[in-house]
Length: 212
Image 1 (cartoon, one colour):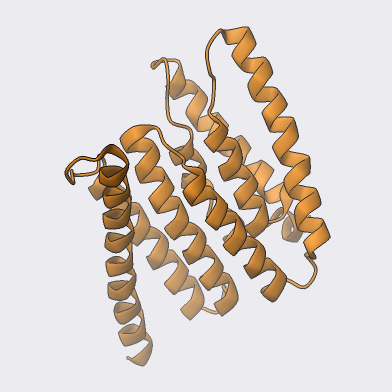
Image 2 (cartoon, helix red, strand yellow):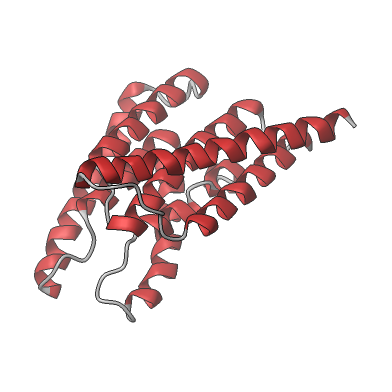
């Protein structure tokens, strides 16, 4: 009974937090455009996905499958991704004002809760992913004659490396590409951020390191 009460209370609080995140992103758009507040596209879907994540995290925690620190991590990543996915869907934006704090909070979390990942490793993994992706972006843009994916996507992927090991982020990126590429054939430009965010919580539940 106590577990159920904890679950329902946590879910209600997290639902409210998700609504606050979406409200903040809507206000960010309104300020950036000097316009009035407007409804975010796919708001109901984003809230539904956020609630699904919260149910999975709380359920895994109650079942003893996810440590409290890992629950905290995946909820923080999920909240950042909720904001970024809503911005990308609404305006094709992945602002540095969001990806940079996501990276900083991820680095702080890793340094405090994951002793194996020191500052030098975080920097090395971030740089080893950022610059190759930047080069791929330039080459792909020249070949296609237009921008294939934005700089914000690269910053988002790099921010995820601050939260998760490099190989897990590569898996997230690969899965996002496999889903996004077929859809991209139907549209000239498709926001990639929401696809990354869709799989961003996966490493919290299963890591390549644990599988291998």
